[in-house]
Image 1 (cartoon, rainbow, N blue to C red):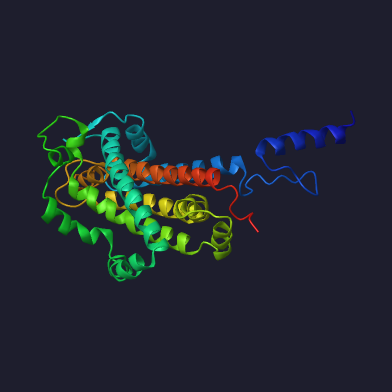
Image 2 (cartoon, one colour):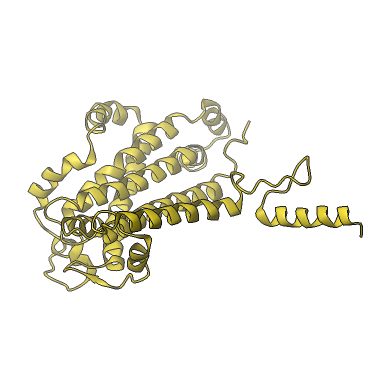
Length: 305
């Protein structure tokens, strides 16, 4: 094989491995092209190297810890920290609180949104109240939740005492605040989705003799599904944001947000940064999961005429 042809072939193989085949000039390879798999690796590695060098130069780990100490915390998720538990246990407690609050918000928001969107008298009666409460920050409900639910837990709600399970760490006040945080995005998006159903669909279903239940099942629900899923995605993200803030306030005894604040008070910045990375990673993962669910359930969205 001629030398030029062999060179071009090697360049093409290398560029294909990098995820960015060369265009135009065969000797041009965009290593740091946006979207290239190598770019996803190189940029974080460069940032970590800069972080490590800066931390060693500063030499103040209680302010700016080196990467090695943060990684040391992440690779030992079962290590106990203070009296609140490990990184893993606190993360699971936070996820459990978020899951319960989000499920309640999803059920209540979707049900009420469909009812308000399809029945005018319900919408006209409740919409003024919703518009007054919706702009309130979910954290603003925390003093109210503490006053009403005190330090009650989920087992106590059902008449049990201390069960020595993870549910003893699920405070009703926090679940209520999470519920409020996720409820309004789900409600407003569901309401907009139901009200945005094309009138032609309804008239066609009525002309074909569809009953009210059939219209709801085959017209309202599928047509509003994209907006409902958008509300669920926004609500889940807000629920995760709310629980982190709620766990930083007085009354919390566990959770990743509580651990972050407690470690900050004790100048353990390696634990603080490790908790921050966990929070951000879980938030990104939850968003990715919701995007995958949306793309799987509403593949037809944007293709209808």
